[in-house]
Image 1: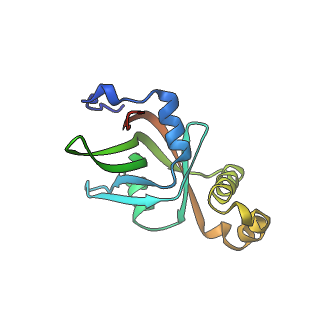
Image 2: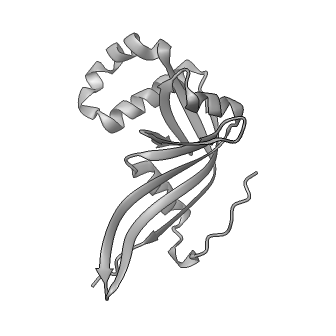
Length: 163
């Protein structure tokens, strides 16, 4: 199990529902993984969040997939809206972010993998959904789908006060 360091600025903590909403609506996320020797890798990803899990696709071989095979514990973060500001004579940044501690695995169930890929298409290329089946015929056999089960999710934000 994860042993996270407690959040220092608890006044900025988001609720679980707000954290999940940020994870669900984020445009891109960053996967943090490590290989068998502990060498880290941070990889920006397109992803979907559905039913408490994060899904992304990849080539079947490569450093991400090798890292997950060596160490299934990963971290995933999403940054939402950000806005640097010079407020009241101080530099600050308004932001929202979520960090998930997770367990990653390759999806072996074909129906689950196709559903995840369909969700990615719906999120990033909804205008091309009519071409989804043809794309699956062409590339499904060479595509890996990874499921990241969220074990712990925290999020925080510093938001501009309404005037």
